[in-house]
Length: 497
View (cartoon, rainbow, N blue to C red):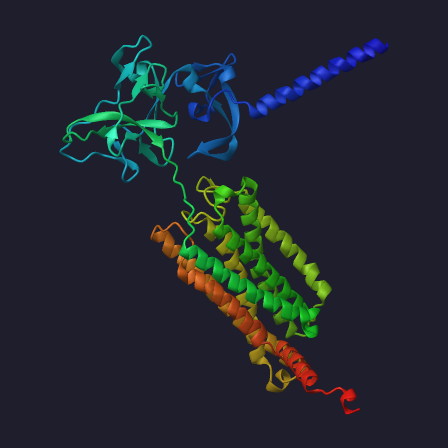
């Protein structure tokens, strides 16, 4: 009985191992490179094989894919069947439809200008056979032909600056030159040879992924220094609100402290990302750090919306405690965290938003408008709504009511807060306009000197509005100044002895 139990356990273990291995095989193993596959969803299935474009494809060359690759980037996609069509029959890729060539200047297919010699036939091409002989053969008789560029940007492989290399197409579908194998991510296009614009030659073009090169110049250092000025200013505001007893535990004081912490962290991370080359950061750091930056910046604006809502309710006699702040603030934090990490795992224009050529939003697309400026705009709209409601309420109140002590404090907070909010909205409006200006000028950067100086201005605006124009803070600072003067002018009693 013991032997039977032992045998049963071994069989069970083998079955479990086989199941795990099979699952691992299905999830991670694909029969060929993605470039050699074609989508065969909807193709005819006959006795375990598939028929695609009149070609029988064995089952072992078919797999379910949950992604596609565009411009060298793996992008999640609905599950679909793909077959290794280039393993059943060699593939040849032509860049453009018949009668067109790929223009390396405009990076798109164009009809050649008039006056040039006629294009070579796309149906025939010189091919080196397996026996080493060269023959001009009909492509469709031996190859599967695919029309289109594998990437958005293609480039010619030349010797020196302009001299083209004569690449040879082999019968097995490979392209070589003197023993050098050309990449599979290619396509053929007729190229006009530099010999009097009279003859064309088939040339393979390779994918040329557009890289965003890291630059650390005067503009980047200026931006980082201005961010540092803003960080120091926000830190001063935070320390003053921590020391002020009237503000320390009030709803407004706690909200301002939470806001300044978010701005300090957000601006510090922005400065760090500006000064560090993405190539020197790990993939995890290049994904996590911008997510945290986005979270702090978005959260700061929703704290301002939260304060605008509280100031409006204060005029109606509604009092919020410190506990109520955290109960309402916690869901906002969770939403900001969810939004930032959703952005970090999303794609825009076939690229991961974070973790590619740059560890911040790519200035070559509009992703920053969608994932940063759009939530900021929504927060500003919410704040503006409560600002208008507060103004309407104040305008309807008789003068005698607004002179009360409670109303006076709230009215002063209201004015100082909205001064600061106006400066903040102006700073970020400049950032949005600068990005749009750089984008249409094709400058691959979010930065210019206007953005840099606005960051420093933002810090000074916080000192001016949140400290200089706040009545309670000014009274607190005067008390500290008076106490220091009293200590300096006092004389110890022992001196009269």
